[in-house]
Length: 369
Image (cartoon, rainbow, N blue to C red; front, top):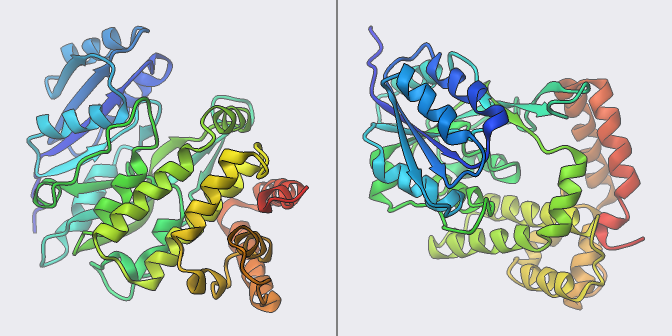
């Protein structure tokens, strides 16, 4: 059977991405799947990003360039959604790149099912320490972990996807699904982590998700230095986005414990990342943590074997609850399993690096010194 070739609208929101933009656009243009509409949106760049995308548009008629005032990532992606004509929508960030068979593989994945698929989700490549001599290409932290009982599936059967980096770009979305549910990006100044609410809006409303456990998208991770600067300059932003996601779960009346556990896990991850750099005694951080914890179901938190003893103690202390009973055996088993997975997924050197880094900051991540 010959594979049909529906149009894919590729949305590229661009702000001051000149050093990486040629690599990004070349990787889209060189896809083995040709039926693409490439929408480059210049969000008021002050470097030469606009001239780079215009040069690509002159050489490839599939490219449309939209030059607009700076509004931020969310508003720019929404403009891309408004301009898109494709049956499928893809979002590519301008400092990343994709492997040549990404779209062909995604469309092939969707085509094997009798029912229409809302989302095709894939693994991705982490580009660790990008643009340094230490740069390495690593599996993402959910590759080989997503095993729904059947495909396509709803997110409750693969809730683990909700605990990791949103990675909304390692997927394609059926345009009619986005329109039917009125799914848009939250319009926040700057980058703003607008991908977080979009993740919940899409995965939690999709009736048919297909997962392909192959990485195609190459995601440039922040270096540790950039991550520290972000935490210091945008301290409460991760918790703000967690609350936005919780608002969506409540609006959608999500009661599936698997999904709520995954969202709790994200909350602890975000808070731990904050208090590595800004102490929990900081008044605004403490207030934000208490508010977030109040929105979690305490029974679900305290019964979750994957939440660390230190995080459970912090949870109870901030909420004024009795000290929790800790299942150290269950948690230890989970740690051992995580270590084995990391060895298989990213290799011994990266596992050793991650373990040393975790141990060095373990106490701070639970509000201790």
